[in-house]
Length: 451
Image (cartoon, rainbow, N blue to C red; front, top):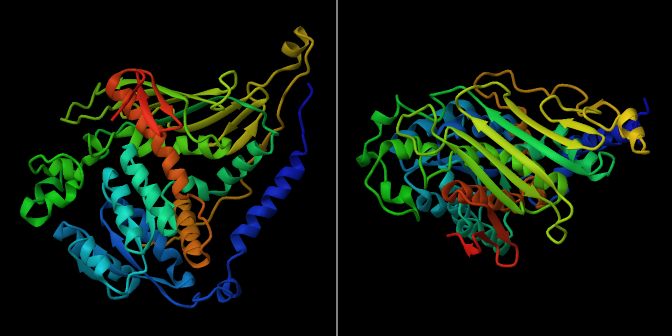
């Protein structure tokens, strides 16, 4: 069997050297060369919910001492969360941290240089706009936006202010994904012919907060401030705390999971958005009052915007009702497969000697190799543990706040995943094929702009 071995060893060796150099490039002498590098960067927290406490704060604490960053304040409109959040950070950091009622109070302070934002899905873009317009750098969780209007506002504000914004699509700071991106862009993988993505769980309680919902009273928060630019409706503690289950606060699966994975398509290929999307699904099992689907399949068409004869399909499936298949990202070329779950490149499915010979062609089989050298280390302190991907993304943001370089997951990446997300949402809500007008930057359904 003929095997394609296009400088595989050189690629792996070169990639490893590059990633190693990137990882160790920031040290004390690097910081000293930057004006103000020895000044402590003081950071505020915007929204102290589950994601902030379980991931972003631990990732920040993991690097704060070395990078000379510290927390100074927590902004959350629910009094319980802001007080508990401030107490939590004080315990982890040993530093004084103030609790403030809202973002106006936060940005009125003179001791806040930057912020971490992890609020409800629909709030990310507008809270990002607030941050950069107030002169602060920001780490803003995904999704960037699930309406094009909000996405454009955030992109425009970052471009205008020049502030450093890192989007919470942490795969972009993960070595195995960086190596996969480099490998595909090198041309050695060949043209992508298909991508299959899944995110399957069996969790009726995922995104539910039954123990916390009864604790939230309207008098203890600011419901109108929570709604931002969404239409007014009476206070609903479930839509506040379980927002991922209810539109227009989230689309659920696309907002939460699709954006992580579809972002890799844009990154690996350089394509800005899908050419079209269709979707189907429903609430098939967990009938607990949720509006957003517990099962979804979406099919995306990608390719050059000016050449419809080239391209590939992305098939995305996700369900809450059976975990078989787990989380997968499989990239296929004519010569084989990249499996981001296993972090491997293999000749799986490639053109074999026999099949090629039947048509007088040469076989096309990739060489097998791993995208990782060794397992990444993480903190063993239970209180400051963070996943390696979020930790790496947080550190990269901190480095860029100091260097003023573009971070790994810049606002342009967030805007691109927002386009795919908005198209997916439109496909869900209309049941029709959705396209995108690149000139007007508008989602289109049936030849008309989809608002």
